[in-house]
Image 1 (cartoon, rainbow, N blue to C red):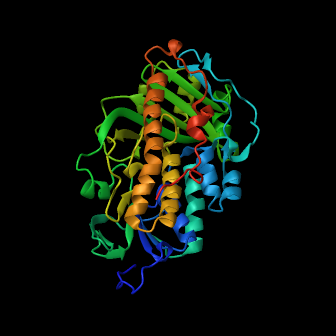
Image 2 (cartoon, rainbow, N blue to C red; image 1 turned 180 degrees about the horizontal axis):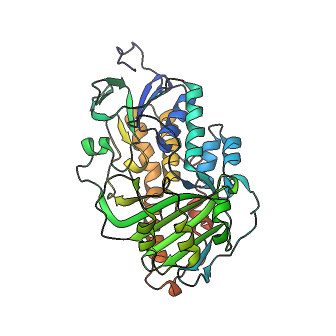
Length: 403
């Protein structure tokens, strides 16, 4: 456990300082690894009892890939991920091509010059192993934060098991329902976005009869989309459906779902969709409500800063939520390396990130409106979102930081 020490006679360099990170997700582990590599003492506190295989497929943008490569992870990430083929957008009922191409072969591998797909658990395992390699005690599980105290010289985190941890700053990477944001920044709870998502993983050999249209296909229907693509070297098919609905009353992001639940939302869809739904393994089929929060004016107060979904949750229509958290981690660590004070670093971090985050947020909303159109035949999707270089080629290792 980190403990507060008496101030030294001389000011410490920023790299001598200690950081608490709340949340051992992708953003939390990214900033932890970046700070450890810069010489910081870091402890990551995660409320889950253990870290393991969780989540499903996610998009690794070129910028996020380059960011993680700067932390020494390039070769492992390239091995664990697949280049994204051109995505086919098809009519929900007929299966007719609306945009993109039916890409049935293996796309050329351009490394991190192009977006890639990866299993979230694989990316998480790579990051976790890298953090632990730097400090075997860096990640502490089964620690639910209940309160943060902060002043001009440091912060203290208090946990539900009556333990505490103190350091020079705290990074809250604890998700959309961030306990830190709720306490210090914004009392308004997340609001249901009237969107319900379903997700499962299906072995490719089982899914094969319904994969003839290619490796990456998005079916567009009235108020609903169904997205599936391959991960883990083509061995698994990642399936996700997002449907407008006002019926969600649950909590959490991993409520068990049934095949009948899933089929009900996708009644009238092409047999390639309903066929995959019927193959959903019960042990991996979950559903969750999508929640949003309005942008806030400040991401930090004193020596406490928000990161990733805790600061700026977005809807998943562009697949950039994970990328934003990873980008945040890199830019925050760079700001802390360049600034002379913690508060100055936090201000520089937000200044460097706010325009990027707002662009992604608004473009994500726009993309959702397009691909959940009431008339799929009129959808004006002219290219895959992954081909939007303005969004996907952002490089957090190179953007200017003013301190």
